[in-house]
Image 1: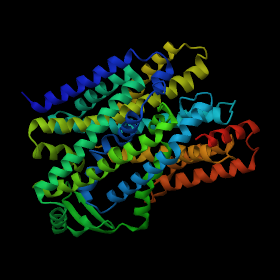
Image 2 (image 1 turned 180 degrees about the vertical axis):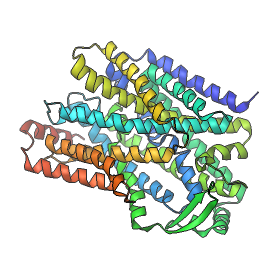
Image 3 (image 1 turned 120 degrees about the vertical axis):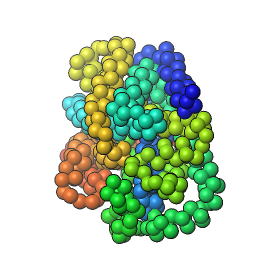
Image 4 (image 1 turned 90 degrees about the vertical axis):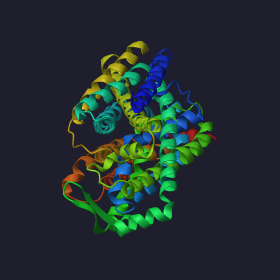
Length: 499
């Protein structure tokens, strides 16, 4: 009898049960996409955090800390993400919740842009939906890769078999329950992730003798591991283990901090802001999300990665396996099974959200808009469910390469959404003179920059030029063209005046 396997099966049974229960609560497309805007502050807070962090929090980020300690850019990413999330909750959440309801009860970002700027050409909606689908394919693929690494590292099964099993599990309850299933399971998963990283970090520090001893041992291996401004090389296959690689430099620090800009354009996170039952609950949700769902797991992940360096006698061939291997070494099988279920929770909580937003783009922004304008709610829900299957299959194909890196895939998709939609959201919510042409130009420029920037060979994270160029495009095209209508300006003032 395998305790870890039993724990996994019990956890999955709970998730599928929630999917079956919420299946009966999902009757309209609004229910399937936004849960009928009924989420309370606790569910919104942990659901937003869980859908944000995904498998990279327990696989990608600890792996980066294992490979480089505090050096290179892992610490700077955590700092950038913490500030970005706090600003997003502080300024964007409330305004977006109010504005999407004012604009004819918009339930997707493409629909919000169309309604906000009275775009009768539907170009904003179509182009937004296309970029959402493009970048979510990479994001969803990263989650499937993370799931495969979890099953591979835990049960020692073939990568491709693990990939298919993980995909089936995630699609099952997303297909059934839609947003409600995703949000309620995300609440459980968010709590589980925070607890897993908190307890693993605390337990590991106690075992080793505290922070002082941890940093002492890291420094004895290589001083660059405890230097936030130093780069470290780690390549087990090539025999390069924790060797100093010089200073990070300004470009490296800026690139890592720029991860925080990504928050403003992530559709799966913004959907939680749109779904909270009242804008008056945003303040409470912000406090819960930032304190319990953000700071603890972020810095817990860094500590776990560094604990792995001093725990294993034999360096890991895949640094992204550090959390998976660490909990199996440190804890008894029952506790390890519980904590490894947290990894599955992290993966499921984001992939399900990504599948859902992608399916809403297909069902609401393409199917109803161009194929079946009078489609019933029941029909649209089923189109959404079928879209989940199609998108999952394409993402599975992208994830088929066993050498795929979770963090690399997340990094690209995160930059894509941040640069494509971040400036568009901010200007739409906070600049009265923003126009339809400005936002359209910003979305196109931001998205194209992300696709083309890697061709320049620059080490600067594509988020930085993409976000800057998108913002410039929005300002320029908003000022040179016809300004916003009187109706749009009055609506902006009403939303700005809501307390």
